[in-house]
Image (cartoon, rainbow over the protein chains, first blue to last red):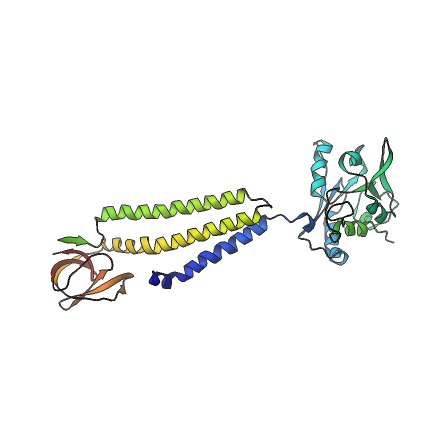
Length: 202
Length: 148
């Protein structure tokens, strides 16, 4: 046994090191980032230069927030032949911010998919007009009007279309500095990037 | 009295070796299956448990495989392979048997002095006595079979 160990100790060492290195790498690839480790934005419609937005977000985000992110994704999609609400409902849980063009924004979208914008968020974006829907109790704001042909914000420079666009914050997002009642105040990447994209520029 | 370093016929010995190899292969497949199962049932909640389950499974299998292959398969296979080589006979009296083992052709052997020749007897195989006459079947100075 002593002889065996003298000759083959290296193989036993490899038998310990290789599985640790191999499985740690495989599992780190498989592990999805936590909700507060990723920023996801969905654009529902056509005409957004997502590549440029992605590059811009990646460039400015480290200056805007201290939040450590593992992934940033800007996606563009359209419901197509699928049912609108059937398509949209899962996106609420996947994305922090959902931007919808007017033609893709069906009646009662705000009431069915989102919640009234919390007061703290309304205060942050008070410089923008709100997307409202009428209910029996009156008009309620569900989103922000971010592109209407008159607003000259950063988002408009990436949008090649001519439609009005509405921005909705996911009620489930954990990256809104806790202003929607979810997540920590320090996790504010979605809030900061929305503020940056919607800032009026000359 | 006759005896072989295999302790049995080469055919039976070969079967035993094949069984040992198959055991290693089967355990290897079982380990891979367990790894796949852990990955399949991995969620963000049980991430660490499944990771360590895979690591421990592989380490345990690795230890077993190394130990089993280098102690129960490779040396035995070397002995078995000797039987396919050209054999010669030698008769003589054993003058001395060394107490310390030595490596010869990758096999741990004891030195056996027969007249003025040195033969090699793989350890833990045959029991020879000094000052006793034997007829040896040898190949490359390694004792394969003994007849008294």
